[in-house]
Image (cartoon, rainbow, N blue to C red):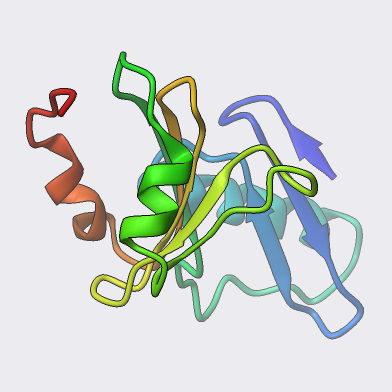
Length: 130
């Protein structure tokens, strides 16, 4: 099911649980969840808005310079996986905070796996090429 404002998609399961994706903020996610619950109620089901929680936050950034993935994989082999024949990005699994970064040679980075937005706060530090 999809709604336009906030622009989100919901997967609704027979168990009564719902997964909402696409929201740009926690507030938008909560609002969309309430709207979906209301739609399900209007369809005649006994839906309630309860147990709302954020399971995964995804972010992205562009460091504006190329990244040498082979060197990064070599120097951080314990945390990274780089198989360019299988996937063009380096997969970097951080321990604290427990997030996964997909790092591309273009300088683009996708961050995923956070449960709270504060996990991304250290990414606002100024970056520069080595």
